[in-house]
Image (cartoon, rainbow, N blue to C red; front, side, top):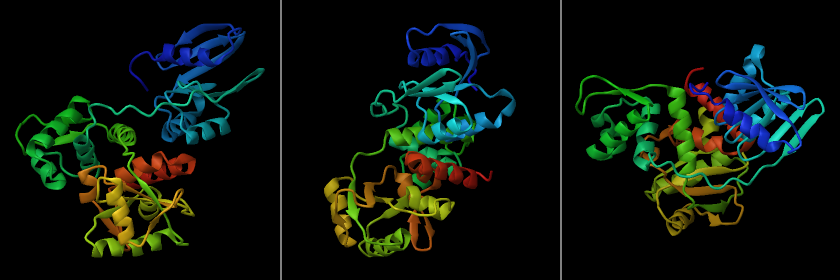
Length: 335
């Protein structure tokens, strides 16, 4: 829960979705929750931060202190579903809401959110270093250079940025062999995944595939890319199904390919005998970081991105995708 008093923010979000005729009065507050009187009815409201599935599950697990309404910056679809199933209303700062409390019934879609602003500190180099650290690589400048192939200056600056953000803590000694440690693994993964989503490339192509088995079909295409010397790696649902099986059926997939432009992706698709088609089941994108291409793992002939990248991509793939992402997270962190 937040260390500062976030309750006014929660109160403002709730007030914004209620009719102007409704009378609201604050009764109590304790930093992360606030008790309101809404037209004479009590309403306990709790701040849920980013509003992801994991945060909603944690809130529901505290059976003795469940609020009437949870408020978040932007409530994910999966979080909305389980909060509603648990009888907890929700509101987010886009203006979307669903509250059913006695005679009080609110249902709003909210404003269409603008594309997420790219966080200034999370450059591709910082994302690459975070991926390597989350995969268990040692947090020294020399180790990060070896893993990512970044320059000493880029690796140093990225480690310093993550330290300044409070995501790493440094040893007392200095130098290229002085290791930094992850301060909070959950927080690092959350902030990395949010930044990865915000910086996701808009360059992509969709190709049509007739494969019944998406994994087997991609394995065959991958052999053709290997023969052509084209680097590639599966991410999202395909990587998740290999690393931590959850989804019973894969209807679409996403692959990172060596190449920074649309024409380069089209050339790679042609090498595997794939043709562009609007709404195709397989999406090809450029590798987002150097680490995503260098820390690949092999699974039954499939090249897979590092698991944090697969998690970040799954988390924004709808309700079932977010559920699969949290299953992947729990599996990889041994929980």
